[in-house]
Image (tube, rainbow, N blue to C red; front, side, top):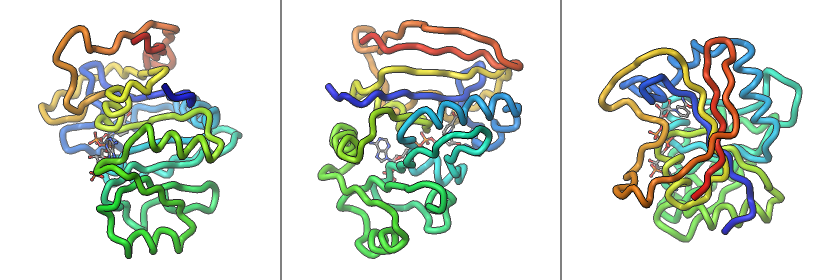
Length: 220
Ligand SMILES: NC(=O)c1ccc[n+]([C@@H]2O[C@H](COP(=O)([O-])OP(=O)(O)OC[C@H]3O[C@@H](n4cnc5c(N)ncnc54)[C@H](OP(=O)(O)O)[C@@H]3O)[C@@H](O)[C@H]2O)c1
């Protein structure tokens, strides 16, 4: 197993959606109060690195910095097999904190050069899809001990599938969104057998300004 602590987190509607059907995740952010933002940024400040998938960068253009509380900014990591992260993305602004693009040999050499010329760290996986074990090994060499996986649905699945998750937190907002194609907390191929499904143990449960917040540890 790995020796980096991996926490997966997400913000979802009561019907499990993490963004509307059009994938505009920013619509969901309207339900976050100042207190919720502080809590999220406290979690960010408690980790050494934050991971998101390139589809989250393309949909939401997040900065992934710590702004609502005092605290250190973690390293930001984008899983991006083809290095599609736009050079104008907020996450590539390294004024406050560094960014690592985790990509593969399928990415264009020109794009990799452009990223490096902007002081972006580039990790090139030896697999067709960024291999998470390999990535965690590279992060360990960079001194990372605790990682927050903020999303989206496919990236969360990859971490669960690779059996790399230690804890999961979920923020449940009291709204129904529906949408057959709306992303859910964890998507991907999914498990087919009950024996494969990840078993969680509830660690805490609280209600904060309308949100129900659940923390679990992963048992198997
Ligand atoms: N409410 C929340 O908590 C929350 C948080 C984050 C995002 N969101 C929402 O989630 C949606 C995006 O989620 P998503 O599931 O579509 O995409 P995602 O998980 O953000 O990104 C998935 C993409 O990352 C790339 N990737 C590279 N290596 C990977 C690996 N090892 N495992 C998985 N993906 C890898 C792949 O694209 P390439 O092959 O092209 O590289 C893959 O299609 C947006 O609508 C966003 O608003 C919500």
